[in-house]
Length: 579
Figure 1 (cartoon, rainbow, N blue to C red):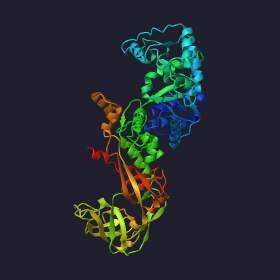
Figure 2: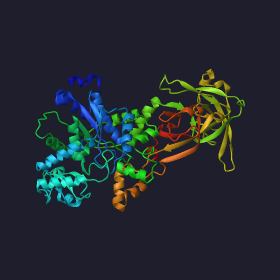
Figure 3: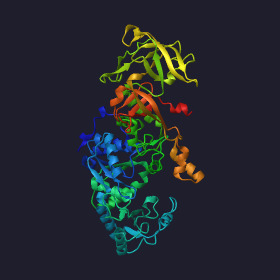
Figure 4: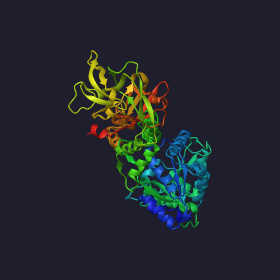
């Protein structure tokens, strides 16, 4: 690859700082014009919205500059990893519209990493330490105070080799010994103070079984894996900035005197995606799932990609959001409303408009012929002239939204109230004549008269009225369950709030979560009606319930029991409610 891989600047938008680095490297001929990235998730949970930003960066850079992005699972901790997560991660990446060049695993390199560790021991650059984790942490010192060398730091090479072999044969108990790199206990970079590079784990691995008992640490496996694969740009988030010198050092050590020149992996860091009213730690998400505070990893209130997919977010809306927030070298808390704005913008252009009534009251058109049924044309999407239309039945008895009728209405109430005209969408202008109530005073029926000369498309249909209501025909609709989802947390920054609660009350993460959870994050409405057109709707169909919001068919839905999830409301009402 050469400079021809750089897109024409006249056709591109402003470059982010990573793209600027890549273009500079290409112009200078680094890595022989090659661009190779990788997305390296640990298969210990489901991907969340924060991962989407990294996916868009890793795969996007490769796409933009004619390179390749590989998928590499960082499977160095068998106690937390599972094949279920591996498959879920693949599905999420593909849903976002990306395909990896090659599929790798850190476990593919266990033998090479082991051989490298043996090589370091023989060079006197690694030793087995028998101190406890607490003793090792105490001896590391502080950022302003140098560490203290381990009493095992200078043990004989042959002794370290023998103990390292025992660690891997399962003869050493977990936590009793670790292998540490011998670097500099006085370094101002804490990561250089003889980092642990291997520990004992006796849990069987999901790919290698019981072959290994000694497992490499992330810092030891990551850079070397990049090097083995030929990665050119190792892109990660800002918390790895202090790890970068160690990354570079281990690459220098593994090349062992080879002249890499510019053909080496380089680490670059960008800001994480932090989102208000969202908790994204996989550890905490696992607590929510295991303790039953949510209905699995794909509960539509979760920040996981599979949850957003189930809720009705489109992959394109995720891309729009990532583009809106961009990539920088400093962290910030992004407003959840910005994500919802990107979703509305995208779904407005792609969703099919349908009629649904989620809190119904019956409307009877007293002068409409009994038994008569008309088919009204409904445009599928006014934003898309190629989307076509479908028909919806109109009859004497209709369902309308309860909030669309008020017996004693204020002056600026433009919906249905006695003596006032409104238009029934795609149908007629009607004039309310009254209502019927039950013994408790609840309205059970609303009465109106229709004007037969005002059917949509007729000359008199242009008569001005201030309100337009949606409806479904009582005899030609389907009953459905509608799930209204809202934000799971009541606090803007649940991560910091949880830490504060735990410190103040000395309680568990679960107990702190229960204090922050939004009790109104899910409302289930079972007495809803939708037009028959939705009988064939399927999950991942994008729908707009007119005047209500954007919805999606849930995976629980069956032909005999339709279930719809609210993806997002038509407008942002959260700020108004929570002022």
